[in-house]
Length: 452
Ligand code: SF4
Image (cartoon, rainbow, N blue to C red):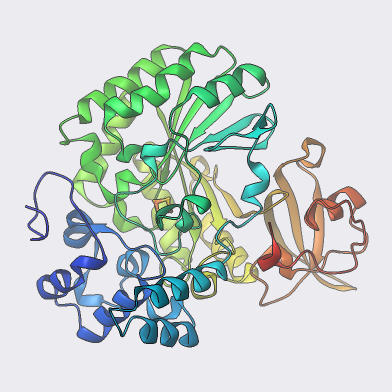
């Protein structure tokens, strides 16, 4: 029964239209409800009854980490933008003013960070919708029907996927373009099916996107990026086609491919429910391998003890802790960002508590325009302090694995706020500067809001 917030076994999403019902049922203070309503005019908002009833601690709202993770917050827009939105939405008859105001604010929020538009490949001079090819061996695939999620993360760097603007959206209607592209690019061994969340699709639809990959010999690994175990674990337990999804996973594994479920957990509470633990066990039983990753986010998980518990719980569930990311420079970045210096500290303090088997985790890592840049530590020298950096992954394969340095800056939260060491090799400096070929490494890298 949509709209009643009754907990049923069937998935039901709730969004801006249901704020009053949520407020009434869970005791959300009126002022907070008003802010949620305003911010959600600009940034996406979506929850479901599992998140509302099992993950959020309503006694700790608004500071509760899962509330911060899923409900739009006051600090996500500037006061000036909030006022502008409040004014533009005051007259319900003037829809045009509201539309224009929302569009203008969104455009300022860097909807496609880290040069994602640079990653779209072409075939015979035509761009392929719903594909990204940044690293030689890996293609990202965005199936059109998988471009929502069971709930939306407030910090999501793909928020532009969810705002109904076709120009900002990566989405492929079917896998035909992908398959043709893969046949022409046998160097690609790894396909990451992503979104949104591919697991929002029915198993039948998911199969239509995944099974054709088994006919491409060069594909060795299929990854599925998903937060469904955290937001709707019923996808693998009690949904009507949950068993079918697991049979599909088994079929992929039986084909000889590695199936990697890239699970996104932001906080250990997401792993504490019986449903989530059961979902993980059922996925593992198919032969799929679970890897876990998430960004470090102020207000949500900016604490070493949170990561220590999270990685420990992942290991206990048979999953592999994989990445701690730095929050990307998009959307409400100023609200959620954590300074790199702090990120190094959180990562190191949590890492030290881990048993060896959980030290598979890498971080903090910036997934930036030139590639994945790890911040390995801070080095004190006679010339001052430096961040020790390393290209974990790169558009240009020759850069992979190479260390470099940047001047320490206590407030910097992204690569473009750092000044590279003048001794940085020219190819790395040029890549960091935006791939322009410029080798003047004495100036800061390209401004983040001007990234393509
Ligand atoms: S689940 Fe992933 S894609 Fe969906 S909102 Fe969260 S971070 Fe974004």
